[in-house]
Amino acid sequence: MWTESGCVLGRIHTVINQVSHEETAIKETEENDKKDNLIETSVKVLEAKETKTAGTIRAWCQHAESDKKGAVFAKNGNGKTLLESIGKQVQVKYRLMDNGTAFAVFVQAES
Image (cartoon, rainbow, N blue to C red; front, side, top):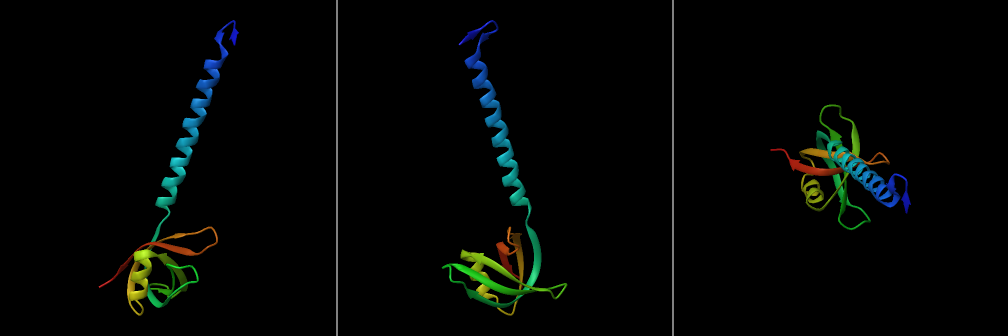
C-alpha cells in the first residue's frame, strides 16, 4: 500500500516491533520486581507437616524478634529443611503471595 510518503506497511511493522519491545521490557521489570520482593527473617519452627498437595510443607513458625506466629509454605529441599528443623531456628527468605501467605524460596537451619 503506497501513499505519498511511501509504503505504509513498513511503518506498521515498525510500530508493532516497538510495542513488542516495550511489552518485553515491562515483563522483565515485573519479573525482577518479583525476585526483589523477598523478605528475610529468622523464625523458630514450631510444627511442620505435609499438606494435601504432595511435596508442599506447611510450617507453623514464630518470629524470633516479635514472637508473632504464622504459617510458612515451602516445597522440595526448603520443605525438607523445615521438616527437619522442628524446634530449631531457621533463616527464611520468603515471598508474600497475593492471598497473604508466606512462600519460602530459601530456608537454612541456623547453627
